[in-house]
Image (tube, rainbow, N blue to C red; front, side, top):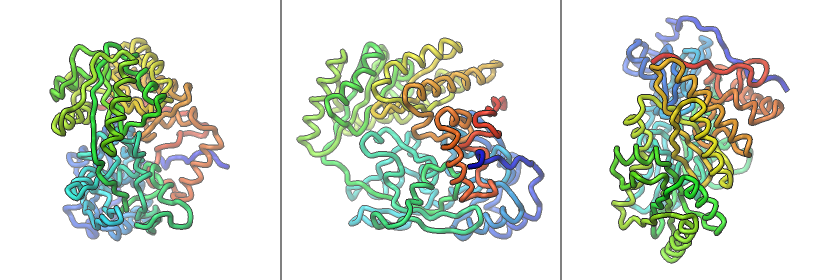
Amino acid sequence: MSSPASVVSSKTAFPAAARQELLTLLGARAVLDRKEDLTLYEYDGGVDKHRPDLVVFPRTTAQVQAVVEIARKHQLQFIGRGAGTGLSGGVIARNGGLMVSFTRMNQIEKIDLPNERVQVQPGVVNLDVTLAVQTQGYFFAPDPSSQRACTIGGNVAENAGGPHTLAYGVTTNHVLGLDVVLPDGSNFQTGGMELDLPGYDLAGIVTGSEGTMALVTGARLRLMRQPELVKTVLAIYNTTKDAADTIAEIAGRLITPVAIEMLDGVMLRMVEEATHAGYPLDAQAVLLIEMEGLKEAVEEQVEQVRLACEACHCREFRIAKDAAERDLLWKGRKNAFGAVGRLSPFYYVQDGVVPRTRITETLLEIYKIGEKYGLTISNIFHAGDGNMHPIILFDARIPGQLRAAQLAGDEILSYCISVGGSITGEHGVGMEKMELMAKQFSGDTLDTIKDFKNLFDPECRLNPGKLLPLGKCCGEIHQPANTEY
């Protein structure tokens, strides 16, 4: 097998002929090329930035195909973009080129409740799928914290998760089929509204490929029935260790809540000051635990969870008394990233995964790494499946702090690997974690991943410079720190 895919690195002016062809195809209101407009598309939710040369807004699969054919004709690099809420630099146009925004392909095309299915365009906002069916007793399970803004196409690209991943799984567990456009302009459908179609699981390959293999122009998704009863608990602790130990205690009692979220003291205070969700300001950690299902089963689970929390020195076990209180607790969790701005002008979110039995020691290591680099690190994460989200606070206006934050992030992820974990659970690799892929996987495995990339995109024009390490040797080159602020 050959070495990992290289990046097309030549950077030239955007061809005038290509611009005119795109204007003719889509119209002036669907093409952006002014600097002040392009600035809005130079970043995602991470810390890296680079401006595309031109952004287009197709409305149909046929238009996406035509855009790709123009890009191929003029040998342009191109990249798909949803809402830009990703956290790993996955939609950064690191070499410029053409950006294809799917925000105007935002229609829910078909709802099939008897078969618990829905068909959507890629620009549909995640939460809007649930809003379209919830009055009839259904919901769409994947629920990233950005679900009020993130779109289905981006969720598919990143295989997004969310707080309820513990019980329901990530996006791939709810994708039945996809419509995709390949880098040569052809398109195909994979999967369908039916279950378990024969043939290769191409939808599974595309889901989580981070937009490096194909552009998704449609998705068929699984819907879930709303449970009979939902109970949400806030468990409050005087030490972070006790809260972390509770997670293993719950698992040891053979209980699987639909969600277990943990906030440490630094984070819960930022959240409470911003949202007034009811988190105690003097606590060192809280667990937000949710159970749902049949009434009798849920009530028994709540009691077992209470016993587990008390065994780990929980100081208070608070059950949300109604839907309004439950929604407020979750509002605090879902709006946590926005609350960070009250304490720090910049922050860097990581996404490592560790076995649940290693959460306590990982938290302690994260705090040590923060002390090493002189940075405050707060923690809020999907504790039930060990998906850690340390948030590194820094000030990019102070020379060296951004670089320190990136180095701290690398050390945290390396530690996650060392204890049997992963460098990402739901945010993706993007351009942020490319070097660390060589620590996660062997060279042969990376070559196999590259072969899949080249099968779909042999010219390496679709979202280049992502996922796989740069250079001839895996991990040879690290993305330099970005200093544009």
